[in-house]
Image (cartoon, rainbow over all chains, first blue to last red; front, side, top):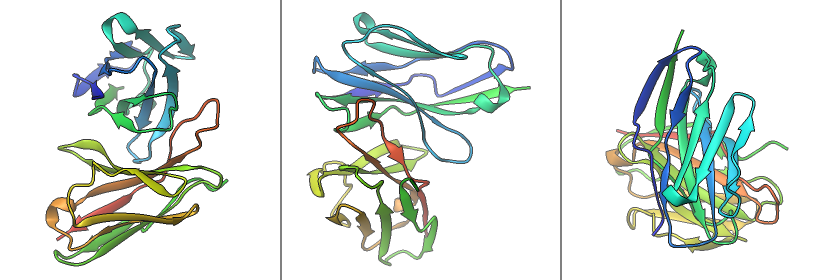
Amino acid sequence: AQKVTQAQTEISVVEKEDVTLDCVYETRDTTYYLFWYKQPPSGELVFLIRRNSFDEQNEISGRYSWNFQKSTSSFNFTITASQVVDSAVYFCALSEGSSSASKIIFGSGTRLSIRP
Amino acid sequence: DAGVIQSPRHEVTEMGQEVTLRCKPISGHDYLFWYRQTMMRGLELLIYFNNNVPIDDSGMPEDRFSAKMPNASFSTLKIQPSEPRDSAVYFCASSFAGMTNEKLFFGSGTQLSVL
């Protein structure tokens, strides 16, 4: 059965600090997809990134970067030089199988607070 | 494109009443998902459809919950009778399996309060 664990319930840092959000997943499939979503205080869920299980290259998008390590079943998310606007709940998610549009399971989320 | 449209945005009802939540997916999307979000349980997948057919409803909490997708542009989630513990934000999301960079597109959610 698929499972996503985000052990950090809440994180609070001061603006401009770097912060890493952890995500550990469990799956029996060799083909799967991992996602990160952001939920700002307004409540909508915003897609950030999708990775498939065959692509372990780390990815950087501006201040955001993702570290995918199959050996530890982890897909961690780092925000560099955090800003107040990064304050949100961040969800890691997993989809098994060859289509990432199949069942997508979310972790419990990490609430990130960036203090000015 | 208008995105995934959910209605109503807010619903307040009394225990025992029937509640119907509505969702219009993005045109052309062939998957539709219903999620429930609570503080205690986070984001739970309730049910999802592919080409209007329910694929997995194992997350539906009990018989009081039912979901339908009569056509590609409309889905409903019904709770009858409603109970206070059903209070949550209900999200609808859609996606298209044929896209090379597919992802879930979420609606704005329906905030349900059962008194």
